Image (tube, rainbow, N blue to C red; front, side):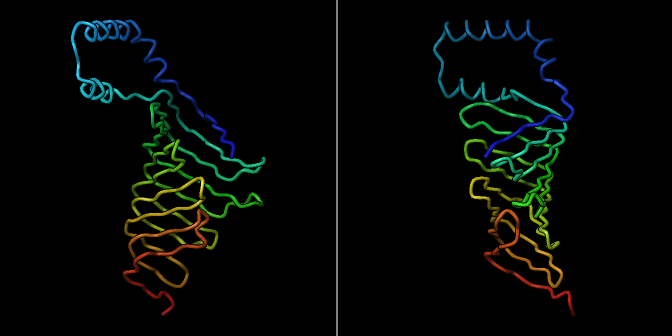
Amino acid sequence: MKILLRIMNFKPDSYRMRISFLPLLTANCLLFTLFLISCENDVDEVNSITARNNYPVESGKDMEVIYSDSGHIKVKLNAPVMMRFAGEKPYMEMPQGVKVLFYDDKMNVNSHLSANYAISREKEEIMEAKNNVVVVNEKGEQLNTEHLTWDKKKETIHTKEFVKITTAEEIIYGNGLESNQSFTKYKIKDIKGTINLKE
């Protein structure tokens, strides 16, 4: 599966910041190097200091990421703000929300997902959506939850949290859910209640 990153309105704020603070950054690096040479340090303490200064290596606004396979769009992801972090476990963070469109083989949207926050873990090939997560399939059936994981490789979504599913006939409440990413085949692990809308 290929990934195309499209920047709709790139504003390199972090780039300008790095340029303007370059002399200060150089001085800080020199002082930090001298500090490391002049005394012995605990490795955990050094890692703790550097972890607190975890800045994105890339950032952009109005971002669009397209996942394709054999020239066919499979998924389209849009985020108002996207930040990419490097390291042993690189990830992309979308602090102002995300909208994801899932396509079928005929290039029709068969479901869509939205959330107020998301984090995509690159090595694990999963994305966690949090806070006001909504998934709607092509039938108009809607899933509401507060935490949902999308497994890109398996093309599934799942959660252990409380879920509410609204269909044309009923509302189902429960804990935990497993589904395909098009949200057409789903299973609630622990159903707590059902409201019939046809009565």
